[in-house]
Length: 598
View: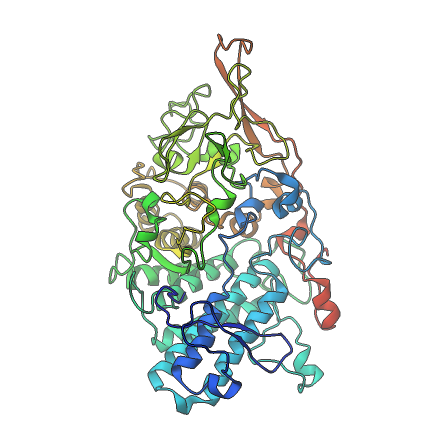
């Protein structure tokens, strides 16, 4: 992402999908008016052309700024408030193609069909125009900016690919002078779409024109890098190698058009994914240049002062006031000190809480772990305390004058405004709030949070490698090394995995580690999809914790902890492994074929 704190001028450039003209609007940060830029002057210099590309960066969807982030569609989260959230409707099995984006179109707000192709046209326009006007630019600038644009195009296509499958691949800006054959582009197969995106990333990597990484304060911090291109390639290869798309029994029934899975499954795809993630580790990571490495203490990773740290690979820029990160507005404790603080959108389920291990590295289901189901929050691993607000905990952020003691328990003697009640308000229905990624320095609502949204970080590369290598070759020493690096990092401090695990046992361990390490980073839904377990995990009631006193009249008894199902149903049907293509897009392009089941 371009560093808007340092950019001298950024224009808001609105491009209508079928228009051939650029519409330029002056940005509020400009000190010199750009309102007179025309199609000719826009491409007359590097500075003017940069305005256009900067807007492409700025147009990246701000994933933090919604109450319906991807975690809300997974088994990790149950948003308070319910009915107004798209995730709630989706979990009830309500998703239809008649809606372009929003409450009944599935997890698509951050990557829907219509806006994706508006964005793609914008990027295609940039590539075409700077190529046509290449005499106005230095060779170095032109090569770098085209590679940045190609990376952005690959990234945007990848976001839709993971939700839709095969896409209409368009690499030139369409206009009214084109023939119907040029305008009505059918969907490519799953494999063709995947190959196109990987090919774009390979071209960027082979050219080697981009920086490997930027640091905080660098003029170009936030722009695309070789690190970003390689991590995206490795992730997509892992995604596509997974059982939902790369097996004889894919997530949705195989069809002749092969739009939602590979036509022919190949076990070798796991090895390819492992090789790419190993390339990252051996080239840019801790076994190579060390440009990327694990950050020492993950709670501090999410502070604005630590942006572009050694673990951060690809992010979306936010700037306080002018382009803030509004994540805190929607989550964290809803009521504190008699005031309303958030929408209560980030509420960990009991299912997620139960997956946090004990400090000794054992699962709570292990009878030797020391877990006490009537004292369930004692002795848990450090990530639990860093990430979860639970009954009786002391919640204190730096901006708060004093700590808030959170009580979700049903207490008739000393009732709390955060008492679990399964109502329609913003109080958690699970008995928990997530504190991960919340701004420790500023109260929500003032637009003062400038933390970037991180798409990919080095810890995920290690997890990606471990999973792919385990599937390709079994739990060899390199798999243990990658997983144990995550578990033993300072601030996590878990024991290493036990030796001698089978491939299946290691698979379970890796999936567990992904869930805990990447929780509330928008990863879990894609894992549920690609592992083909959403039909299990999202077809049962998720859990909450009910806490009551055995003598409720005066609290003279003991507090009883009772894991319970949530009061609303969970429904997941086979078609929901993919989003639908909006019906309006199909109406406009008769060559588009709808996804299975819609």
